[in-house]
Image 1 (cartoon, rainbow, N blue to C red):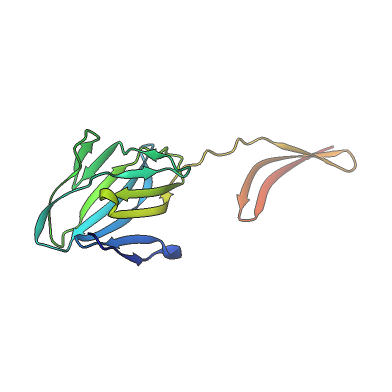
Image 2 (tube, one colour):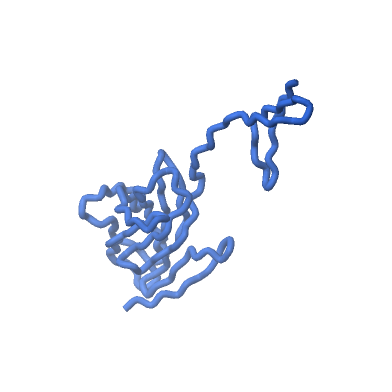
Length: 172
């Protein structure tokens, strides 16, 4: 039976560290790289000097609640394709081992709804995706009628906080 203690750190109390009887899971974050969303996690063994550790049943959920099977894992620098073999190996007490999860989520994702590792021993919710690219809106000039038969065409509009700044070209 695994007893988990949560440590809250970061902006708005975002949960990044989870302690279990075996050791500590630390979420380093999720980000876009090479047109895919990756999430980095470390595990540090605290319960014994060494053991075999495998990350079984990893689940990733998109913001709409769809479960997406991870495409690939990088564990301790070694690539593991989704072939039914769980990523892992021998770990040693006090040495963090990094696991990178290629989530299978679209590069336009702005958050990961949930990341669940190791049969549910570690779970993070609502993880922001750094450098997520959201398609830019298509720029189209806006035409405004002004009294006295003037028209204004607005171009190069950019939002700056609650203000939108544009270049206005006036024509009579």
